[in-house]
Length: 86
Ligand code: SF4
Ligand code: SF4
Image 1 (cartoon, helix red, strand yellow):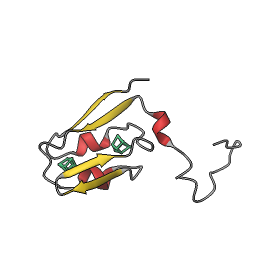
Image 2 (image 1 turned 120 degrees about the horizontal axis):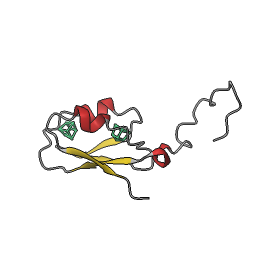
Image 3 (image 1 turned 60 degrees about the horizontal axis):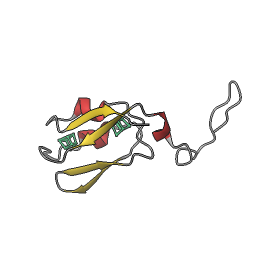
Image 4 (image 1 turned 90 degrees about the vertical axis):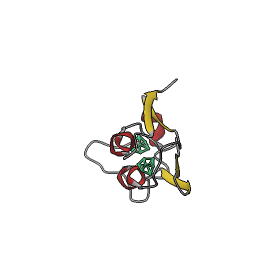
């Protein structure tokens, strides 16, 4: 997405802006110790964490920018950040 100096993105552009390309680290959701607290989903700034079933959460890597907030906030240390292979 091209932005002129001083400009802001048009509203409704977040789907087109695939922030997964920014990623240097990626979260791995192990789905082993998850207690279903939803903190990863609540705190993810990209809204790309979803619950697939009770105590199983996953991430959409198209939009995950690798910030690590989900891993930091996880109550059960069930998410690890690993170096992204490019
Ligand atoms: S690393 Fe950041 S963007 Fe990716 S799922 Fe976790 S909180 Fe969301
Ligand atoms: S923060 Fe951790 S324990 Fe809580 S729902 Fe997400 S993966 Fe599960």
